[in-house]
Length: 320
Image 1 (cartoon, rainbow, N blue to C red):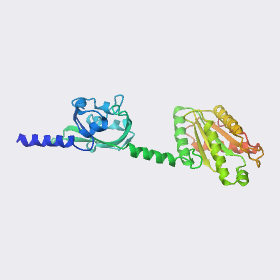
Image 2: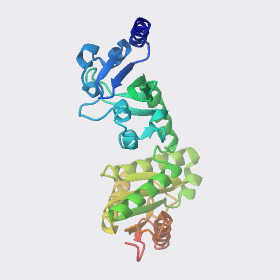
Image 3: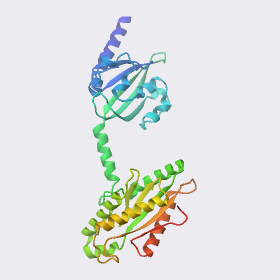
């Protein structure tokens, strides 16, 4: 009676070893009991190096961290979102889980985006015997997705962040500033007398003007977290996390200086060249207000700058 069982187990092991899907299996102690040929090809790590050990993580990461199969084997399913931002919600160990993650892959020297499925194997008595993890290289698909998302987030004319993406970023930075109790500043920017520019030079040249103004805004931002967006038409907005009104004023001055050096002719303008008006608002977000408060304050300050003669900035009172 023992022989058929042994034959069945041997067949199962050979079958898994020759699957075209990269697969490894851990026992309940987290030791590798199967590391198939496809897994060797994917990771560059031979089965002989990891069989009987708990060192399988080295095939995927530079520093120690659990693989998905480890978390299932150890019953740590509540920790899955900590290690895998992209994972299915699950409530019981019996369900198994799907996740995806960027892996450093130290042996092959390239980062891969790996889709992972891990599921438990139980005996007839209901005891956990092992955990199977299967892997799929989704790097090409992920890169294509990220490219499409980046294109969707950008304004087609200027290359800056578009309004929809900016609104998402503003909300995220507002919540972060509220949590960290730090200031947040915003500069609303408008190209002065842009309709006259279009009437003088035509819309194609007007588009080029907007592209150059966008480049000026981008050149005035020195910190990685700062963001410039086309908010609509000839209106732009700059978001400055962890900056107060004084810091925003320095950025606004740089924008003015860079644009003055560019010296784009605008004979129909009061100043004879392309200029911008800017409204600055800064605050330390709290739970009683929404980001719209900051936008409204900056917009009011922008109107004040325009009313005062353009080619200047104004600061929203009582917001900084």
